[in-house]
Length: 352
Image (tube, rainbow, N blue to C red; front, side, top):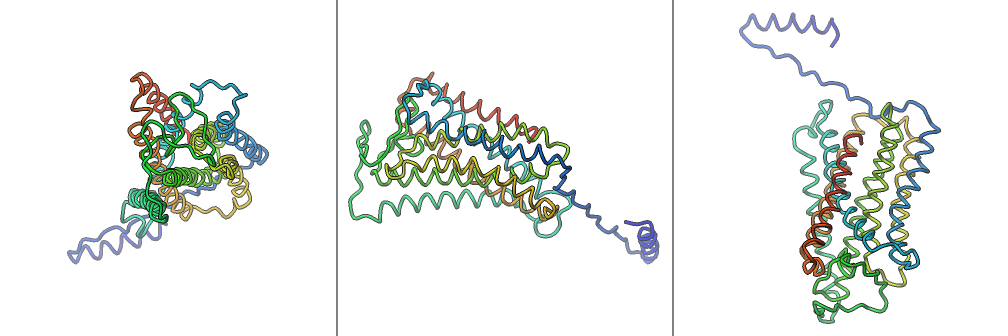
């Protein structure tokens, strides 16, 4: 507010006050700080495209390749570690790297209007969780009722393995026969639809998140160096989490290339987003950028919260026959790996 405006307001308040009416100061809305703090260093930013491409791609592809090629001679405990470590990474990403930034964006004091009149972050996340549940529920029911054949309940101890499905190798207590790794009493077709639905929900949520990571890094300012290093580890860890889940899903032989394609899609997303961000850096705004980031981070958080808590925790530990029969030390080790992944990803949240 300029000095002239302040003087006019004081005169008006004095005049109204004399009439016994209390005047209120006009609400001052601070200006939004621009989310575009681009300060040059184009060469380093271009290098981020290739470094993150290599890190995220290797992280996502390694579990798939190692699981399918016995010649790699990767110890079983490595698969177990990456599987549960990755689960912790995905869960922490939902809360620390998505929900918290979305809250900061949509509750920024520079925003005005309906966006400030409701807790939209929690509301959007809640709606997304319900949508994900209904999508999976409908996929399961459509799979069951779209065929005239009766549902065949598989034996608990020896589930059938269709010949036209590529079964992942068995690595101790890292099962891969059913819904992201747990065996349940369903027909083969129902198993397959459930697994594919869960995998694609996870893929969509992770890729959605990666787009905005790339755009943020492209226009980062003084914190670019720190953000660069942190996001390399962030994307690599997240790639391990995604790749370990793609590796244990039974894919049809005709589509055995699908997990590789999904892993590469994840690896390419952030580098492409960085390139796009560098190309349109001049048009990335402040207020609109806050709203867009906040809304889409809330959606991504809902997707990964549902996937993490339902698919990666509940199904993996409580509905997984192998884990239910495993020694307590095995279960505690898996929980420890998951907590380690969540802890490291939460620590990265201090900088990114």
